[in-house]
Length: 110
Image 1: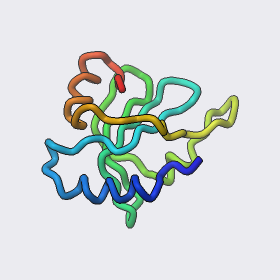
Image 2: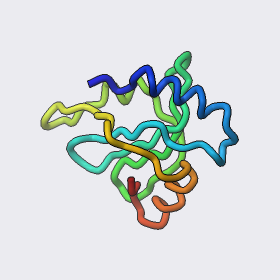
Image 3: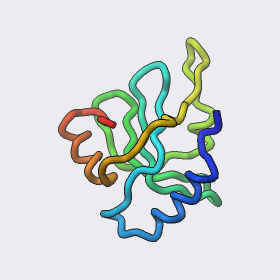
Image 4: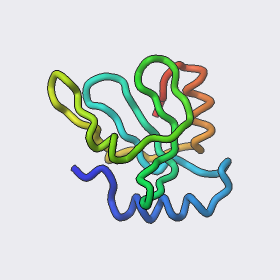
């Protein structure tokens, strides 16, 4: 499965025109084994850097950047499974809303 679709790229471009407070996550990535989850609201295709809510499954989700290349290369050491995109993810709030809830819960709830 492709991690990003052409529609995702168009949505990132549209999101970039909004005020930061109004930006919703465009994609949800996750590791099929474990609790690592990323909600991504921004992507710079030139640098390959993404911005969003990142949770490595250790109880400390945070807003920050992540390399798209590194996400593509990330593999579970036991099964070799890579990062996947949640094809059914539909955001019901802004990235800030998800970040507030994640801080309260100690994990991303999406």
